[in-house]
Image (cartoon, rainbow, N blue to C red; front, side, top):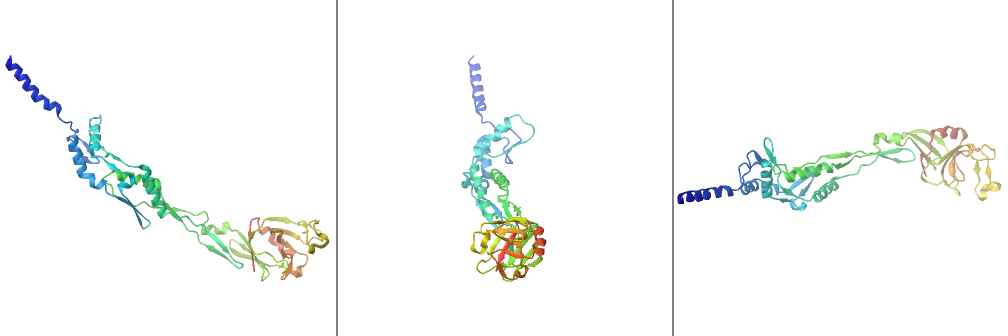
Length: 326
């Protein structure tokens, strides 16, 4: 009887350590590619830490447009936990699965701070596109070339940064590509965007019509007399009319017609045939005094011969830029 009790007690002494043995990670399990099969959790944590701690806690950088943007793990509150990585490997190994199992390391970081880093990169390299435009001079139209803008795909860079932070074997020198931003108006499209332009050369009494940035026709004109000068500056055609009525201004030079309206086509109407309004009652119109062409004779308007204004009228849409210069 005594011998039986002793044998039973001895068996219990042998079985107790076995029952208390630490669990081991099943075979075929890796953590970020590191084999932890058959290891206890502390052994797996030590092995993971040995292979990845230095690399995963090292800075990464983004190089783009000749600039380098550094990101230190502490900048995004990065934390790596080898013990929790080992526990993750163990849990994946004991869970039902087929084939080999690889688990990611256990890391934490602030995604909002990753986004802030990516915003900084984008701000550091971004350039707005420049639309092509014209520089209007009295005798020619110069082109100002368009220029592509640039940016980066911020969503893709966020993904790349996160993938690098969580992967100890990932290349930590990122090279996000530049993304071109096209201007709304290209140099090639300038001719279409500025299909018609007029310039008024007061000093030489010339009206020049440009089509698709090239000189199309030149007309002789009369401009405002010294007491009533034609205004200078960049304007546009505001309105148009065939045989326009004339409402005389309340001015001494209008004489008996002051504040009166003279019907279009009337022999007493100084606005002959066509009207293209520019600014503050000043416009382009035909005249019944063709001999005034080539002089300062009007009360501010640009006079043309009737045949010329009739010829010009259909060539000039509302909105056409008009440069009036000395």
